[in-house]
Image 1 (cartoon, rainbow, N blue to C red):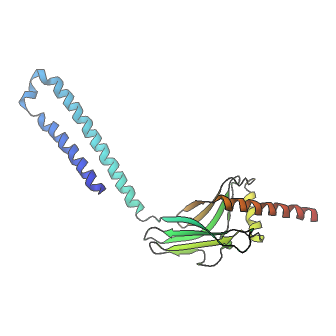
Image 2: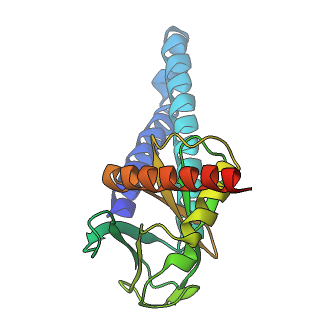
Image 3: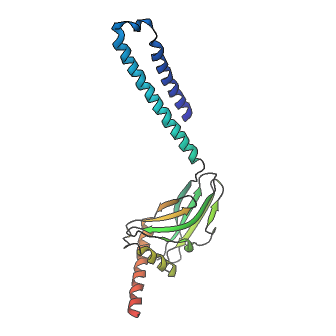
Length: 214
């Protein structure tokens, strides 16, 4: 459909320029009193011709870009809450859906929290389902990454990594899904962010206890 519109526009521009050019061959235009009109029409023809050339270049670049993107992966990310046994816990499931018939190699999952310049890998938190790394081969194929926020030594290591990049404010948070081609970001919901803040406070209290012990 786009190419039909583009062809129609280009044809109209060509006919317009051709009409101006053919009109310049009429003998009436050769008379001195018409020199201003001839100059004006020549100017208009030059402008239209230049615009048509620019338009053709833009279309060519766009077509080249589209062709280059045909072999680039594309995924759709979504997030859902899953039941947790502990009321002080939140279950989260990240869903990655392949949107092209191109293989997507999922390599790692990270989290990033506002205030820290560092991100921390959470791949080891995965509960059940397909392992990671994982590959999506088919259009529409999905992969799920489920985890819980129950405080554990794994979460302690994650918080330690995050705070190495600066003080955590928990104003915003993101999941980072890393594939073989690129990284994708998925915003954390506020409920999960608040729960992680609570777990981080537990981590901080644990650090203080360890300082007193030693």
